Image (cartoon, rainbow, N blue to C red; front, side, top):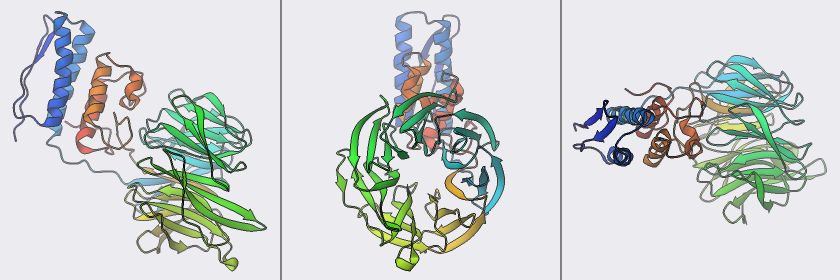
Length: 457
């Protein structure tokens, strides 16, 4: 199919018109219609300002990029990396997943315990429990670019889908810190229960879920207002939280310590009603330490620690999302401290503080595919891309840019909408959306999020 559009900009009068496109696709047509409506509004005023002329000219370039990008093939994705927090050696190990080897070590603060990666920017956030800071690592250069002071003993860390905020739990202060990622400063704190530990944020970015270990509860935080609007009693000590990819359910690892050990289960919560649903029970003397959702959303996985002499299991289980049935995947000789799942869903990566290793486990067979030495006492792991996903304009973080999101970005460029309507469109955080960012979003609309900052041409 030949796609032809004709545009005309009269530089003398700064007026703009789009002639009728021929044989154009539906998504292109929708965007052109939106821009044409803005053009007509300018023409009704008879004379556009110079700023408006530049904005419309930029939109014309973006539409041309959209037309060209229709003929592009899907851009290849870069091989992913894993980042491991080593609380015993005050470092983060960079692991090449393709070759199952550690390729770099980054010095951070004292006792790094959790890591979280932005899906919008090439940034990794590391909580340093003993130095009361959060380290910011640029994953493109593998260097620490900022060290952010926080309240005492930062533990868990989670980012909003647009990458604008970072939430950090402080179990000894009964509070959360909120970090502005543009300025790398803490701009607020929120009292939360007594011992807030694990944090998870819904995929749409509307809510954060915070576990309170001592009060056996999970709090729902409305991110728009930064206030607690629901308290969910889970009955036992919550240790970790994961939210399903559709945001409909929360999977909460809970345990009840009895004597020298205890028993655990996964509590499933309906996020709309806050109803506690039936969830899988772990074997006796087995406690959950980390729960994650596979990137595809097809299953959940839980790393466990247990007393083997009493029937406990140190290893990993998978949970079917439709039935919440539990499948024992593998048993490890050393208890894991955290788990992450590969982008493809083929492998689980488990850190072990006792052996200073990351174990790579095949999801299909439960076999250990590799053992990767890292730093001392690894406590957490995050799988990210060597070149992060470029998702300029993906406001709801679903890894695709929609026509609605493109139209919103166009409206921001024209000055008709505020930047907050699509923060993901401002890739370089300079408080505006440029033509290059709009063109990047056009590429993502057609190819999905890709591992390159290059603009399709």
